[in-house]
Image 1: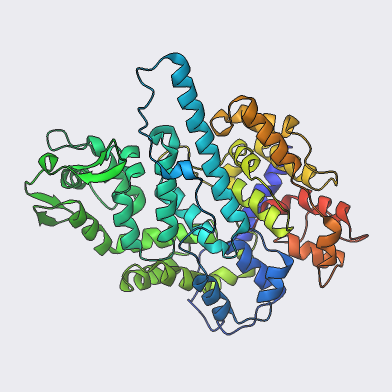
Image 2 (image 1 turned 180 degrees about the vertical axis):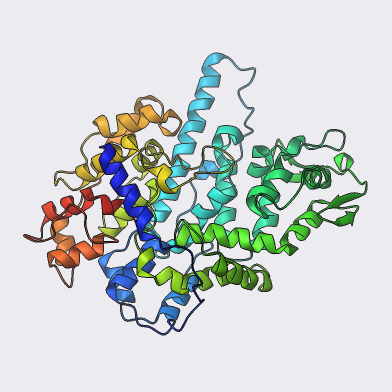
Length: 497
């Protein structure tokens, strides 16, 4: 098993070419997409690539295909949130109650958390424009908040709506909205930031993780910025953002060379004016869409465009997706699939109906990506961190069950192992276990219908549709059937995108 892990990691490491002076849109924007190109674009900007999606983009010009993906992004989810998630319940509720009441409250919050995770996974599975959901997930890992600390599914639901609304819009608007987001106010302790005792947590992460990146600010900048944000707080009864004027420090402050009676909006403006912010965001986008190692020449050029556009996220995305670096053969299969990408991408690629995505939330958590609960303020590290002996075995077990032909079956070891690894994502009580069992049993793959939908049902063509690179172990020759799909899914290359 460890040898297989090494094979996956080594495969990812060798396909990424060293950074070089790749030109933006170097004469390739009008090129027509091959089926392989269409698959590459769809897998990188969404979750998997179904035969119908590949067919629809094949023959399209690169620039027009990218423009269509960007234009189709939705700002609003397709399905409404579960009703209870629209009502804020104060996280402190239950304190002072008896033990039974406290347990009932905790169980209800856990159930709501599962509902929220299942709802979001349902959006990823069913949206006709998956780039919007991928960007929502990207920003969730950039502007990290976690249920482990916020303890309010309703506030995380609000934040999810916010991230989707701004996912490909103005980064400046997104940054200002996140700074006022109640979940973020709780997660980074803004509610404890008062003029008599400034709390530096939000100011530090604002600079280090959200905008400038490490090495581009000093400790004095953090202290002064924290003073500027004093008074930015939360109404604990309504869950709404408030500014407590009496707690705001009105004294002179100096941040990155700019001085005055600065408030939080002033600091955000100062950070947006810095070219380091543009480069930092573009570098993060590169690692999400292109490869693990950014080409700094391209990052610099795209960062300038991004800055000049007023921080239009679509401008940065379009430039990266039309860069020669994105389309280079050496960068295909350069990224390791995250747990969400593996689960949702597989189900979308093979058009598998999922009546209730709740088991996917538990499985993803067991694989190391517990939605709404990243491990720390830096988020999931991604890349090689997604794969170890335990998680690779669990990945292969899920795929084995999916492609063995008799359905996923009852939870058994598949869900039990995931629940043991991360109990926070698992429902509590017999009702939750029944829900998981029924939902898992409802996931079935109609391989005959899927194979019949292909224009080219030869083994090599199927392998090229399913895998980012030629298979390492699986032989695509022979009968094209469920067993071939099973072999391809078990190939190490299946873990790459």
